[in-house]
Length: 245
Image 1 (cartoon, rainbow, N blue to C red):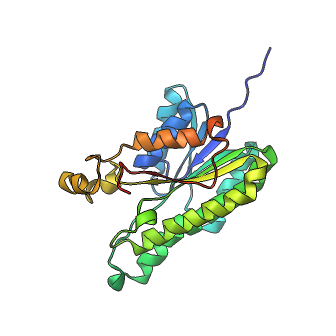
Image 2: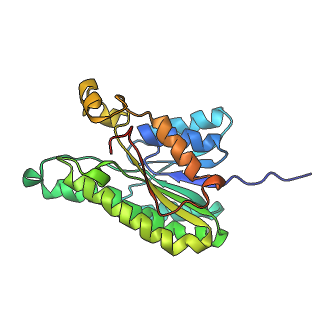
Image 3: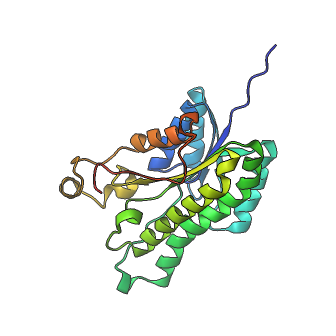
C-alpha cells in the first residue's frame, strides 16, 4: 500500500483578514496544509480553518503576536515539531494613519513593529528548517504605498518599503537553496480595512481600471508564486493595482 505524500505546510500571518483568508483558501485548494495565523481574531481563524477542512482541505489555526519575539518563537517551535514550514506568506500588517507632522511615536512604532519586526520574528526561525528541505517560498505582502508613497502613511510606506529591500536581500541569500523570496504589492483591494478609506468616486479617480481589486485576485498571484511554475522568479516586487502605477 502506498502512503500518502505529506502536504507541504503553508503559514499565512494575518490569515483571518480579508486578503489573508483568500490566500488561505487558495493555498488549501492548491494542496497545502494551511496554518491560519491570527493575533486577536483566533475565533475567525478557527472558523476559516474549519471551513477549509469541511471543504476537503487541511488547515489549523494558530494565534500569536508577531511583535512579541518570545511568543512568536515559542509558537513556531511547537509548529515545527511535525515538520518544516515550506511556504510562508507574511501578510500581517496594520494601518495607523496620520500626516507626518502630527504623527505620534506610538503610531510610528506600532506600524513598523507589526510589518517589519514581525517579518523578522516570523521568518528568521523558519529559515534553517526550510533550507534543509532545499525548497521554499517566502511571499511578503506589501503595498502600492511602498512603491509610490501615500499621504498620511509615512509609517506604513516605510515599513512596507523596508520589506521590499529585505525581500531582495534575502532572495540573494537563499537562491542556491531552492527558495524563492518575492513581494506582492497590492493597490486598492476590497476588504474591511479599505472599505472606509476609498469610495467609488475615489477609486474611479485613482485606478485606471475603475474598480477595486478582489482579495481572490491577490490570492491567485500568491498561489502562482508558491507553485513550482514560479521556481525561477525571485527577488521581485510584483504590483497588483489595476494600473495605478
